[in-house]
Structures are given as C-alpha cells and as structure tokens.
Length: 268
Image (tube, rainbow, N blue to C red; front, top):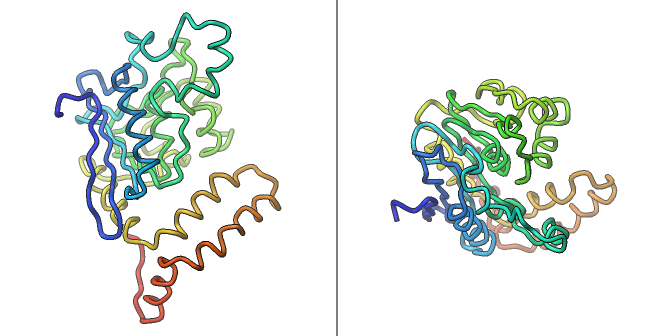
C-alpha cells in the first residue's frame, strides 16, 4: 500500500469521517500518470458516493511538491492522442478528466493543502478545494504554459471563479510563478500554515467541519456552487428550496437545542 502512487485513508472524527487522499509520487514531484489518474477517479467517486464520508483532504507526499501536474512522459496514458472524430465529440461529456475525476463536482467539503510545487494540473487540483491551505514555501504556476499544454482539469473554470478575471488571466496567460504569500493575497489560498504544519491544520479544520450540524452545511455548499452565475432571482429560489428539508432535519433540531441550552461554538 505504501508504494501505491495514490493512497487513501479514512479518519474517524466527532460527527463524521475525514477522507484523506495523498498523491504518493514524491520522487516525481507527485505528477500524475495513468495509474495515478485511475486511482484518483476511484477515490473521488468513492468520496462522492459514500455518505459516511464528510470531508476530503487532498495533499502530496514528501516535502517538495503538492503536485506538479500531468506526467508528460506518460501523456498517452492520460489522453487518447489518436482519438477518432466520434471520440473527440464525446470527450467533453464522457471523459472524467485526464488527472482522474477532475470533472466530478463535489458537493461535500474538500480541503487541499500544499507544501511545495503546485504546478499546471496540480494547480488545477488545488483549486478543487473549497478550503485551500498553503505553507509559506509553496509555489504556484500554470507551468504547462511553457510547453504548450492546455489547462483541462478545471483551471480555466475554477481560477476565474475563485480569483476573478483580474487575477486569473495573468496566471493563465503567462504561467508566472507566484509564492504562497502572493497566492494568499489574491485569494488562491484561504489560509497560511506554518512550514511543516499544513496537513495538521487541514485535519484540524476537517474535524471541526465534521463536528458541525450536517444538513444545513451541505445544503448551503450545494446552493453556493449551483447558484453561482445564475440570475439572482433564480439563485435565491434555488437557495430557498433548502429551507424545509433542513428545518425538518435532526441536525438542525439538535443544533437549535444546543443553542437554547446555552452552548456556544466558534470555528478555530
């Protein structure tokens, strides 16, 4: 198991379970080849479909890299270069993404944490985190710009949505490297963690998410994701559909009871 290029582990927590995903190719800067992509797809599908799993934490093994993107020495394992015209036409709707499941939209919280190189497809994977953590030495880049390789695992979708065009387009156009502090300033990183403590912080956040009432959190996350860029009235109506399912849920009833009993809780 320790030699697998992608390792998953489940951590029990108060109120839920944390699904840890570790890209385990540190000698290759955690770049993704065909075997890793296949394991990624299974991991993302498992997290999506297993209702017992509450939060996912994605990280890279070693102390150098989160993920440096696609393994360009194994490109034919990730994309069918000799695809027929019919296969090309079906690709956008039927392929799960070269890096494995990157076109799956997760409606449960995902935390990504980087301690180093976060390049090209690795940057795209990092952007799939709803909460994104970086240690000070982390570096970010659309590094594939140098080699003429396109963003195809969500980069052109997530970067503009997370950062706005003003910050996303320079990254996409130039491939310029930016440090963690700059990434934090433009919103690519939500929180900075001390060197060597990124995963520890990610797990602390994940456990606190598990401890919170579940139904309202999941409904609000889905509403925020699906309501983005819809006309405002349509988005408000989408949000309103959550009202009765949530107020009838055990998690809201128990949460209100805790409030009424005097219990107070703040995320730390």
